[in-house]
Image (cartoon, rainbow, N blue to C red; front, side):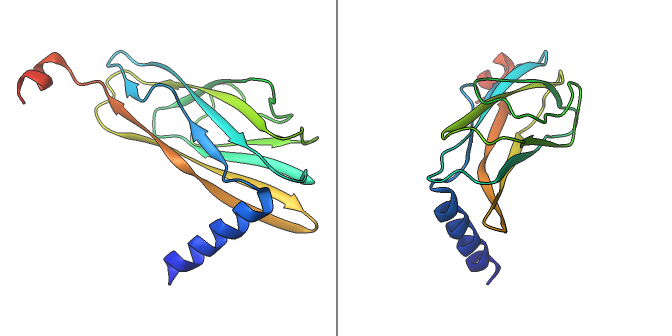
Length: 149
């Protein structure tokens, strides 16, 4: 039952916005020394909502390095923020809305790390929330791990 309700909620949110919001990245492997990765938040809509925002949850030890791109939100978390981060547009730009989230990950990444995001919009007196598919990062296999296979 929970799955059906979640699917219906996702479908309704997708219909209201015109498209599923996405979080994407070009690089999904993490080096052992730590580093910076870029996640791109994108949404396309048919009619401009009255308000628009994103919430993104970071894995433990990850921090925000910065926000960039053509559609940088009016309200962004400061560099160094961690945990659940929120961005908001005071004035919603024309579709498509896309911005880059630069993230610092710690050295010694030993497992899978997941970035989850959710788009929130307000239109005609109704608040909608739609989850984006998560972005999954993996540690780069070391030479020793590869040779053991």
